[in-house]
Amino acid sequence: MRLALLGCGTVGSEVVRLLHEQAADLAARIGAPLEIAGIAVRRLGRDRGDLPVDPTLFTTDALGLIKRDDVDVVVEVVGGIEPARGWLVEALRAGKSVVTANKALLAEDGAALHDAAAEGGGDLYYEASVAGAIPLLRPLRESLHGDRINRVTGIVNGTTNFILSAMDATGAGFAEALEEATELGYAEADPTADVEGFDAAAKAAILASLAFHTRVGAADVHREGITEVTAADVASAKAMGCTIKLLCIAARGADAAGRETVSVRVHPAMIPLGHPLASVGDAFNAVFVEAEAAGPLMFYGRGAGGAPTASAVLGDVVAVSRNRLAGVRSASESAYADLPVRPMGEALTRYHISLDVADRPGVLEAVAGVFARHDVSIATVRQGPAGGGAAGRGEDADLVIVTHVAPDAALAATVRELRGLDIVRSVASVLRVEGGL
Ligand code: NDP
Ligand code: HSE
Image (tube, rainbow, N blue to C red):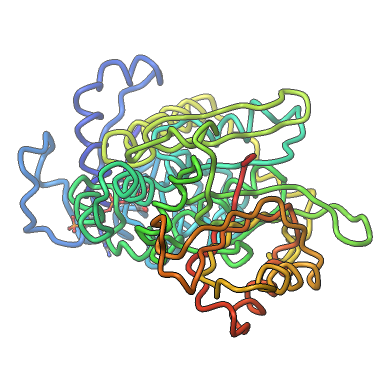
C-alpha cells in the first residue's frame, strides 16, 4: 500500500512517527506493508526535528503526488477548504481511497467528497475529524446502523474545553488559557475557529449527518462561541452548583405540522456538576448518544493533539487499505432521510438570566410580566443584594432567574424586552441551561 501524506504539521508528523514505529504491526494487520510515497508540505525548508522519514520524500507539489499511479491512499492533514477540496476530489475521482481529518471541509462541502468517492469507487474515511482519538464516527456509521439515534450531546472542541476548565478550576484568564492550549497543539492554526465555535459547529454538522442520515452542513448549525463567557458567568455557574461547557447538541424533533425535523446547535451552556459531561476537563472530549434501542451511550477520550488524532487517522488507513486489498469499499454515504433542519428559534431550551435591577416594590412583578407575555415559564427565582454582600449597594438587587423549557425565540424576545425596562439596570449574563438544575 502506497500512501501520499498531505501535511506534516501537528497531526501529520505524528502519523509519520507512528507509521515508522508500528510498521511491522500495521503490515501484519493490513496484509501488506504500508509505504509513504511522498509528503506534501508548504515549506520544504522547515525544521522537522528528528522525524524518522527520508527527507527526499517531501514535496510542495501536492497535486502531482496525488496523481501518481503508485499512490493508493491519500491522507489529508492540511486543513482548510481549498486547496484541500480540489486535491481530495481529484484523488477520489481517480479511485484512490482518502483519509482526512478535515472537519471544516467535510462540513462545508462533504457532498462534493462523497459524490467523488461514489464516482471513483474508493473509500472516504474521516474518523479523526470529530473528537480526535475517540472512535465515534465508525460506531455511528456502522455499529448503530440498526438503531434510531434521537439525540447527540457532546463536548467536541478540546481547546475551548481546556480554556473553560482552566477558567473554572484556577480562575485563569481567557487569553492565558488560550495561549497554553495553542502551545499544546490543541488549537487550530487560527484559534478563532475554536473560540468562536466554528470548529465545534463543523463537528456538529458531521455528527448530525451521520446520526440522522441527512446532509447537514456548517451553515445549518446555530453557532455561538465562548468569547463572551466571563469570569462572572463562571462564578455565577459555580454558585449554582454548575459549570459552563461549550456543547454541541443535535436532536430529532418535529415542526408545527408534526413532520420530523432535526436541530443542530453549538453554544456555551450551564450544566449541573452532577451531569456526566461536567467532569470532562482539560482538552478531553465526550459525546453522549441517545439511541432508541441501545439507550444512552457515552464516548470519552482525547479530542485533540497530534498523537491522539494520528491514532484515529491510522485506524482509518488500516481500514481503507484492507478494503483495497480485498477489492471492496465500505458503505457509501447514507443521507436517505433528508430531514429538514429547524431554525434555532424553534429549538427548545432553558435560560439562566442574571439581572441587576432596582430594589423597590413592583420590580419582581414587572420582570415576571415580561416572561409571561412571551409565554415563558419561570422555574426558579433568586434575589440578593446587588454586589453579593450582606448589605449590598442598597438601591439595587441581583435577580437570578432560571426558566423552564421554551422555544429559543421566546426566550431571546424575553431578554430583549428585559433589556428595555428602566428598572433593569443591566442584564449581567444570559446562559442556556442543559440537564436538570
Ligand atoms: P498544522 O497547521 O500543524 O499542519 C498543517 C500542515 O499542512 C503543515 O505541514 C503544512 O506545511 C501543510 N500545508 C499547509 N498548507 C499547505 C499547502 N498549501 N500545500 C501543502 N501543504 C500545506 O495542522 P494540524 O496538523 O493541527 O491539523 C491538520 C488537520 O487536522 C486540520 O484539518 C485540523 O482541523 C485537523 N485536526 C487537528 C487536530 C489537532 O489536534 N491539531 C485534531 C483533529 C483534527 P508546513 O509544515 O510546511 O507548514
Ligand atoms: N482545534 C481542535 C480542538 C482540534 O481543539 O478540538 C481537534 O479537532
